[in-house]
Amino acid sequence: MFPHRARRRSDRPSRGRPLGHAAAASVLLLGATVAGTAYVTGRTHDAGALVSSPAAPGATEATVDVAAATSAPGPDGLLAEAVGDIAVEAGARVSVAVLDTESGHGAVYGDGAFDTASIVKVDILASLLLRAQDAGRGLTAQEKSYAGTMIRDSDNASATALWKAIGGKQGLAEANERFGLTGTEGGDGPLWGLTQTTAADQLTLLGQVFGDEGGSVLDKDSRRYLRGLMEDIATGQDWGVSAAGPTGFALKNGWLPRSSTGLWDINSVGRVVVDGRGYLVAVLSDGNSTKAGGISLVEAASKAAVSVLARA
Image 1 (cartoon, rainbow, N blue to C red):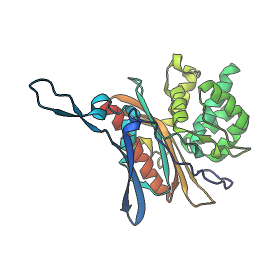
Image 2: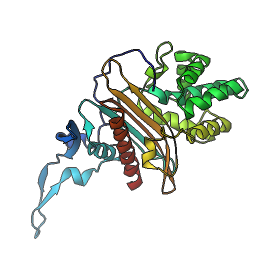
Image 3: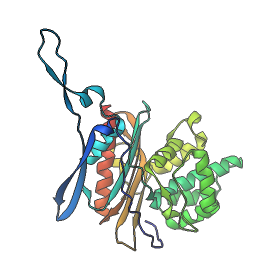
Image 4: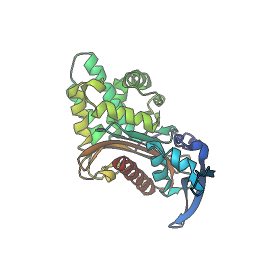
């Protein structure tokens, strides 16, 4: 949770990446009602035309579904279909990114920008660790104290102290350029929780934390330290992507009620292990009428994302 100044929520809808056969696809909106609340699910259906193939001598004429025969949905398309089966509260948005760390296969649904709320604390600590590396030093005792309470307990005062230590918005931008993030912009002044990001960028950041020596600008000790804190989240804050791999996970969650609308931003990022395979997962959402409803949405999206790659 993050104390904040009211800001208008973006009305731009979340969009899935185009499917490989998008020209032959149509989207149907299916209405449903859950506990008295209006929900909408979006499901993509192929609209492949049925055409007659020339009959060979002595053969009967055949009918062929061209779209089904020539292209099947890729990972992004499968993820879009899976997310489309989830009940999403009317007015809410969700975006998901997932990566199988063993195969390197991944998928993204939605390209909109969302408030980070407290998931930015991973980025803040990664930026601090990178600055310490550049200076050839480890974290001070005070920095470690702040880092521990910021990640484990989501302490906001500690986050504010480290936000200042990295140089705020500018310092975050400098680190993120090196991390490879292209769609993240730090919050103004002390408003680190209003940093804007995308699910794809959060997946890139997770790659820096959970990747190997050749794929991360963070050194082994920095990665081990940050991973260790994400594996030790306080009881009661360990919801979110952990729903996809409850027996092995490392995560950071963010939750933020918007004073201007009363709606909730609910986000979760991290790594889960399912059947011995590791997956990086980032789920962002906003426009949720309740915190509990947002958590349910994020957890359902996390499970859907991992299941898509597990079947690939």
